[in-house]
Amino acid sequence: MSATADKLCTRAWWTKKLSYYETVKIVRVKERRLRLVQVLFTLIVILYVVIKVIIIDEAQYLNEVPTGNAHALFERDGNISVNYAKLRYCYGAYNENDPESTSPAWWREFSLEKLPCRTWDTITHTVSRLNTVFIPTMAREERDRYVCGAENTIDDLAKETACTNPYEATPNSRNEYFLAGAETFKLVLRHYFLSNLLKPHATSCRDACQGGYMSEYEGVLEDVNGKVIETFETGPGADRLSVPKLLEAAGVQLDRHMDSDADGSTHSLRYRGSVFGVSIYYTNRGSNDKVRYIYRVRRFQTPGFSDIVAVPDASDWRSDRLRIERVGMLFVFQVTGDIVKFHFQSLMIHILSAALLVKFATVLTDLVMLYVLRDRAEYRKAKYEDSQDFNELREAEEEQQERLIGRLNHELDELRASATTYISPAPSLAPRIGPYSDAGTIN
Image (cartoon, rainbow, N blue to C red; front, top):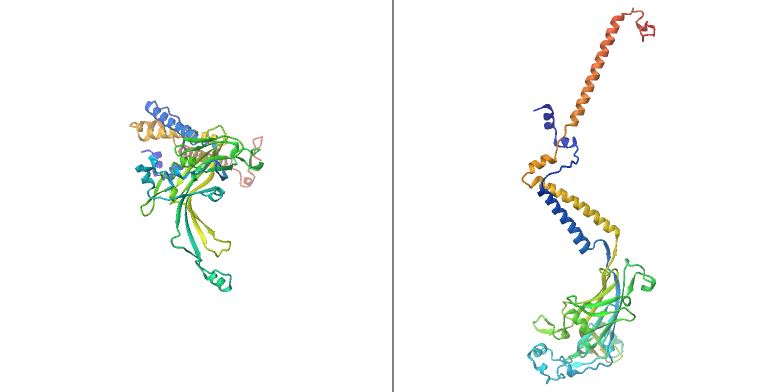
């Protein structure tokens, strides 16, 4: 083993790593399999970027979830009259001579809910707040008796202060009935949205924000499968959504969709009530930046819904009262969506990322070549080539220069010694020895 090889073997690993530099050498390997592997990896990367990133995810767009509010009122056609004889859920008033009324399916559906029907006026029937609407379908009434004092005296006031339960239920006063015609109502709906990605609109948000009102855009009502049930055109006014259409969009029916109680009994949604989420989805994706909105209705899996109101018998709050539990459908509206805007910088970022991924395909091909294929040892020899050790070359040059300088210094010393011996100056003249003059004499 040569002296150079002995030096390399005795050095530490990190010392050897610091002693050389790696650079890229292009080697053309004549192997069709490697070329096919590289093309396959490159094709996978390109398909991923084009199909997944650009087409499916649309990563070249900036996206934002808009915000907004919705407000709904009730509307009922004045020409509609509630005929109990035509309502199957009105027990005792429905025409049982109808052939459909005696069918086994009908009795199974309504055998547990033999309740009469009543009609409430529109004012009593409607409960509308911002982003929510409540439509009662059934009511439970019960009378409460005031038990904390009946006269305005000091003793009674002291008693009322200490009274923790001022009312108690009157025995045998409970009464249940369906509210006829709940499905004849329509919701008059108005809503708007706000988005920072859209340009300011001249007629939107009172010229103070970016977005728009529903009357400026087209909309549709979709069911749970994405099928369009109803369309809404642009124009002034509000959208009118009938209760049957909303229930159809949610995929349920008041009298045929059953829920089980904890005790195992089964009741219809008309009897139990339910909560529905109505999503107002604004989007301009896939429509050439044209904004549209979509109504989507989903039923929440809740154990019914009801609220309680108390109606006193007199103006004095100490009087008895009628407690009414209203069971029905609560519609909760939410303005949401997906507003997008093309962003050139995002597109360039993904293009550069794709270029780096294509380069990574070459790295994967090299790994397959060096560690997987059968001829990997030959491929390694072709790919990696060791140069001569320039560190030792530089050290040898430095040693040679030192030897040369040493030899020259030695020769110079010998020359000086020989010159001193040849001249042999007198002792008195020795301190005056200096350089030669032009005449060849010593100064």
